[in-house]
Length: 142
Image (tube, rainbow, N blue to C red; front, side, top):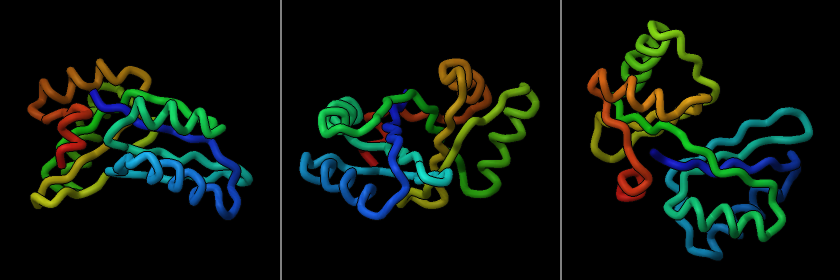
């Protein structure tokens, strides 16, 4: 399974810059990120090469941070690859709480990052249907 960093931040200029400066200063590589805003606050979600180190470093820097397990599924392309996953989840009554994706250099391969209440269950379901679920090490090797 993969791990994602989630930061709860005030939605104002300079907050993202401060987070990035902390990460860059510790030579942590970001593979993917997403920002969701909700009025005065937002959430920054990151896939980084050293998630446990990043969590501790960001926590020590005073950020509200959490480390969560996510399911990272290799799909053939977007949007059809995402549709294949959503078809599977709909047939099993599984809700996707949050998700984002990105393409990797080896086209037409893309990665779809999925947050659910039961990531271990989801991993079993998608692998049983022939999808490849990536670990932290596999993601960071890209």
